[in-house]
Amino acid sequence: GKVKTKILVCNGAADKFVSEESIKAIKAEMKAATVDFKFINYPDAIHGFTNPASTEMGKKFNLPLAYNEKADKKSWADMQEFFKRVFKK
Picture 1 (spheres, rainbow, N blue to C red):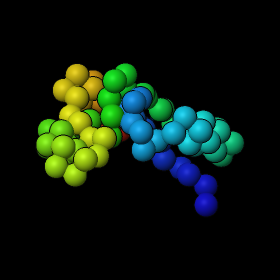
Picture 2: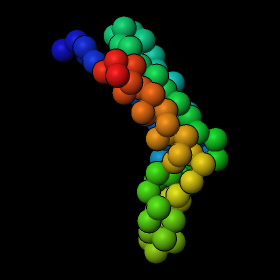
Picture 3: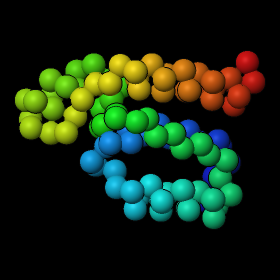
């Protein structure tokens, strides 16, 4: 069906789980479907960048996970701004 909502994607630019090809593909798909979306890449952030427990979990399971305080705070602010725009408050 047609997407009627606005979409915000907050992505860790260094996330090894998300390829450049998949980013290009999702952007192209959103544009083709005329979806109102915003895609933000946070420099030096990898998978789990908003979760303070990610770094320890990454070490424990040998996965590329890590908390990134700067990206976490920036994505939180970006999300709040997005919600203000969407909900007009």
